[in-house]
Image (cartoon, rainbow, N blue to C red; front, top):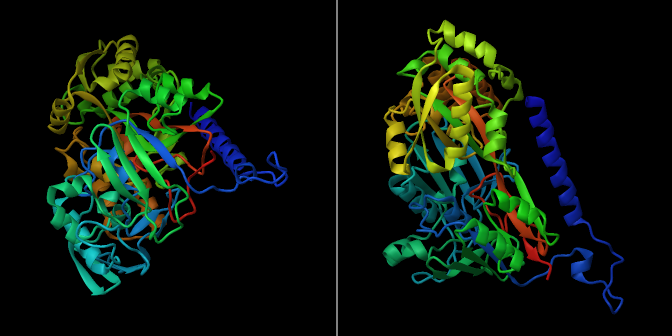
Length: 537
């Protein structure tokens, strides 16, 4: 099972390498009807045109402290700049608005030197002025105090050292601050626009990114145009239109008909529909997202680690993943962090219980449940296919009767958070830093939250997670601590790992230079790493 998955990942990598080489190749000898070489035929980028992108949901707000959905950040990423950015492979950080930075040894002070060629988009209350350290102070302190998703934590204050130097001072050491600063929720905005516009700022955000908002038609479209004073490479595109298309079939048909050039969040049978079109490409890679089946660690039969292990051994993960994703788009998961995280360690896969129904039955009998038992799994409607297959496996392999309880999101969140679900299925996606998967879902201080509704508690795990957050910023040292924590977690079998979802986009062949990101919330049109999408009309 694990070998086939690794081969799958290698095939995906090889496929994208071939596609990347093909996209970059161009013949110097190609010519137009007049015998002259054309930009399109030689593979050279062309300026002009508007890229039409389909989004699956209507954004409610683009205010960085208020946004909650990935479809909102997909727009915001082209409008707002952050102090630092992730490299495209998420291996490390690179400059954004900050050209350089220093971190104190005690992880309490982060000092950023800003670039001096960044300018805001002209707005109602400023004419496109220079970005300064005062803007960093305002934006980061505002996020610390008002972010509905707590996108930055532990901020005591931001000190303006000089016009282009800002120091973020923390209440307690935090090695994850750099990851937090890559979030568009911590994008830098001008105070006069936020305060001057009031509520209307949420639909007319002002940033210093490569594009600026020029029109918002609720439930229909958000239109951007090129920001000519952008500090990075000048965008090839004149503009970008984000068209709201909530129906997945309509999304695929819009791509096929040419109404949009790029479709986001492609799933199910539409993957196959797009792959069958010669003029389209399906780009799909494992995302920084995992789904799992939580087992109640505190009450009921699953409070016994042997029962949890028996259930894991009686669960055919491959059958669940393939059955719930008949057209592809997901692969089996093994660890508490996604494969795209720098904390992932293949060697730890050996600690994951292997599928063995007969041994599982013996282990369950030794735990006192020879005849099985009755239980319940709480899920949202999207998880019905997964839960139904799991239900059948439990009955057949262990004589465990699992009642499927489908509830709306509010009830699900409340039930799981209160540790009232015997079993539940959920998913988690965030940054590649293991902190956002391990601390949020396994630290005892998260018991009572949605992440750790299973009630997992282990003092040694807490200690290791705290050390990785507060004692060192060195990624190798933090990785070792997270690996130690995962070894303990895997031995305790607090949940069953299900799958790593893929982030997929349907792309018209005329779109050049676009790459789908492992982060579903990232949709890059222009960045500081050389990405600059253009249209081969």
